[in-house]
Length: 145
Picture 1 (cartoon, rainbow, N blue to C red):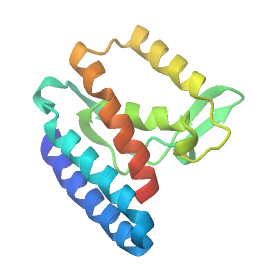
Picture 2: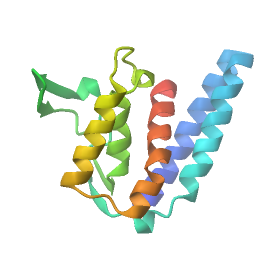
Picture 3: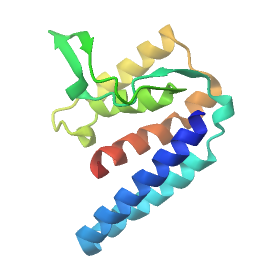
Picture 4: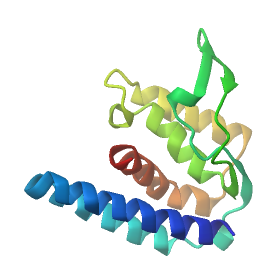
């Protein structure tokens, strides 16, 4: 199920990137190239090797509530799906990337988050291998959507 859903989302997402690229003209060529490359990377992932979890599907700052430094709420489960947790982890990592929309984002905090997550909920060797694909997809997705 997850690979079918991901293939459908990948097709829609790539079309949006191509539309935006056309709108941007010459400056959009790099965006379209990166989107196509990442789409090919996603297509190469063997989703049968990725365990499925209940995933939020739209894990980003606007759907999170904090009290101080503590996460106290998660909202907007409209896009929840049973899929690889890498879909949500890719989104979580972009929270800590300036490319994820916050120019003051702290990349070191993102690394700390991933390390702590991995200690609590260990990722398989294959999940670790393909995680960068999902991080790149999520950053590009933020630009396109």
